[in-house]
Image 1 (tube, rainbow, N blue to C red):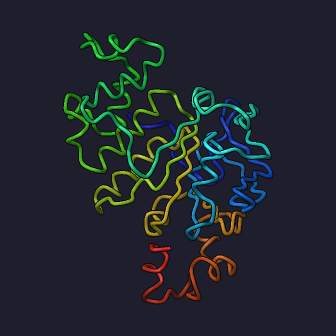
Image 2: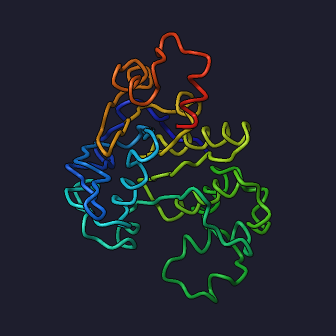
Length: 273
């Protein structure tokens, strides 16, 4: 199954489009300001990459949006304020996230993992019982993630990349339409990175997808827009080309190398940033 529209710069906004609007978001730990007045507007259909040096505030920003750390300011999902809501209530509003290490039930099958994710409110006995049929929502997630042939295999035997795809599938069956993915290709092989990028394209046309990433080659290949954070603030925002050409980004994040004439070590430096 393919989406009606692919991710595009600015999104594929329509009358029923979802969006995430972040205004003056701040997170402080013991006097240290980790996120310092961030403003972001994230539209459905715009595959946004969030990059920046270590300590720039990327993961903390995602934690604040999903309720894992207290924050001030505003985070509105299609007009509904998220600041102050509990983590599970934010998830029920359609905001899902992954972590750098996939959180799946390794003893259970791929299908059971998806069934549990889709079955909030059902009893544990009902969830684990072998079902005579599979819901269309789960079948669609199996198809989108490419895990259909592994549906009856324990999640624990999946390759690293496949576990990440399963975790994304678990968000899809929960009807998450804002997905926040924290370094989804960390530790993946080249082929797994390519498959993950293609998966993000498949899901990104009809959802708001934000990818926290250090892999600059992956960002250049798949991002439709980029936000650069530095010291908890938004340093630059735009297309990949616009961000790479920004002198502030070159100075702070890409080193002294020109985006137009990269030094031989530029890619290595940025990947390890």
